[in-house]
Image 1: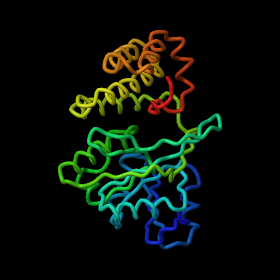
Image 2: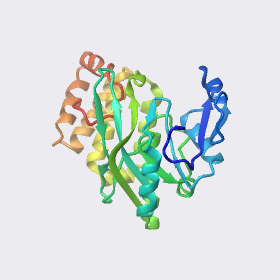
Image 3: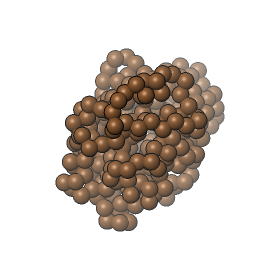
Image 4: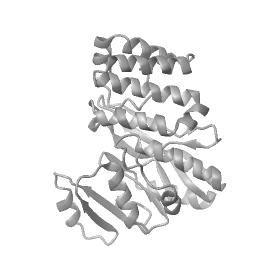
Length: 274
């Protein structure tokens, strides 16, 4: 982060009750751009909101512990925001998987006409806009970026502000550090589906995708009947998507679901065959 080509920045490290050497490493660095905020463990969304509260810049972006930002990350996003007078700028992101294969995910075209991607490191937003929409939903420990993105897009539409994008992959994420069965993931997905029902009602394909995510997570928790129900709803919403049929088939056979989905790093990556 401190090697960014953009000099005018502040780096806020929120230590959310870590048990590693984070604090010692940060305190050993002598750089006025760096600030350490220590908190008891309270979750990713609460930690990010704490960072937003003490931030002073015009723009805000976020990195997780498994992200590596390329040197021109912030300079590129800020230049685009200023040139296009945009409230939100989205960029591509490179994923490094357990098998050593890298893949690039780029912003996806939305019904609004904008192309967006809301993952850690893939977007920059005006701080005032971020505060106006209420920051992150602190009940979420998963899908928090996507959920925030829905509210940011709605606010930009209401205010006539732009959401713009670049396909450049400016951040690399090590996805080998994610994965496993985590109950809070399914709860977060179900909350997003419920709270943003009007959005999903307008976009059947996206609704089907997130029902598919719920199907995967339910199966990973051993809730196979619930998994099959979500997979069936997903297929009915988007029957032309072959992945929906594959998910339904897998969900209907619990031993196959356990074998196939327990090894997935993150079921929110619905760009790959399921």
